[in-house]
Image (tube, rainbow over all chains, first blue to last red; front, side):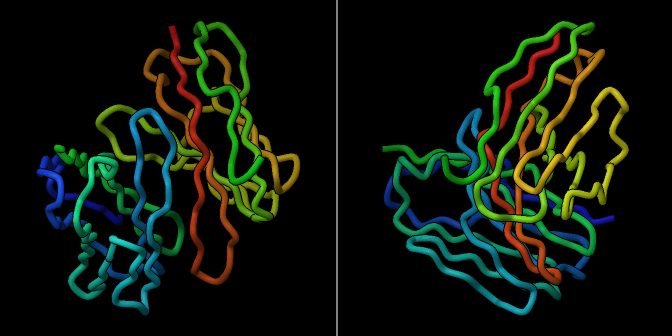
Length: 110
Length: 114
């Protein structure tokens, strides 16, 4: 059974810092990994999707990496801004379904 | 309307009520999903419809009944719910190709069962 863990559960940093969010999964037989952002009480916004054959994806200030063999992914956020404050979720797609981690609640302090 | 929409956005219902949640996707996708998000728990997949057929029912109690009349619409019919069913219910859609797809989510319906 696939399990997805995100560490830390919460993170608070001052504006302008670069930061890394971590995601680990137990079964390396995945099709892809997706990073989402969720604002309080809202739905999920897809940020990046990495196919199993890829090592990383970039979108603006965001960079996600994938090391399938070790069961790890990181989301790198450069030059953080208060508007980046949200919960970040990673999810892995196996043969059947998308399995989510519990998320990292990120707060960027002005 | 663009993306994935859900109505209502908030719903309060008693345990004896019957209500329905609606989801509509405007992305031309062929698969739709219902998820439940409870406090302090990961998102839980409830149902998957692919090409209008239910392909997954993730051990969901029968008081939740999904309906997918076409590839753009998905409903979740609710009856005799329990207080522990209070949660954010999220709908998503995707274009299912061989092992590679991206899910797009709606804003959710915040359900409170009293």
